[in-house]
Length: 75
Image (cartoon, rainbow, N blue to C red; front, side):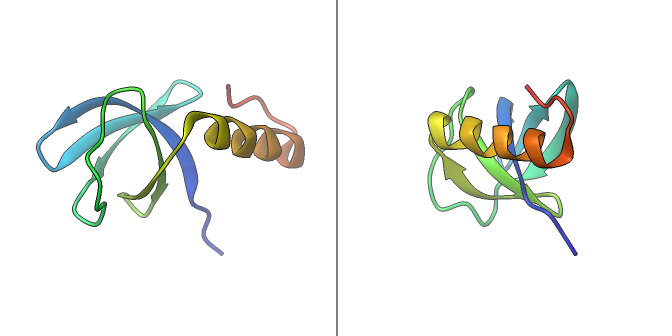
C-alpha cells in the first residue's frame, strides 16, 4: 500500500520543488500539477511527484489525522 502525504513547499526551481514535513525534506517533480505553486503552499506528494495543491487548513487537518492514527508528531 502507498501513502500520499501533505508536504509544505519551501523552495521552487522550475519543474521541481523542495518540500518538507516534520523536518524531513524531499525534492519533488511538479510536472503533473496543473496549478502554479508558491512557497508556503501545501501539496499532496506521492512517488516523488506533487499531485495536487491543498489549502493550508485542509493540509493541517490531514496531518493531524495522520498524527492521531500513527501516534507521531508531524507538525
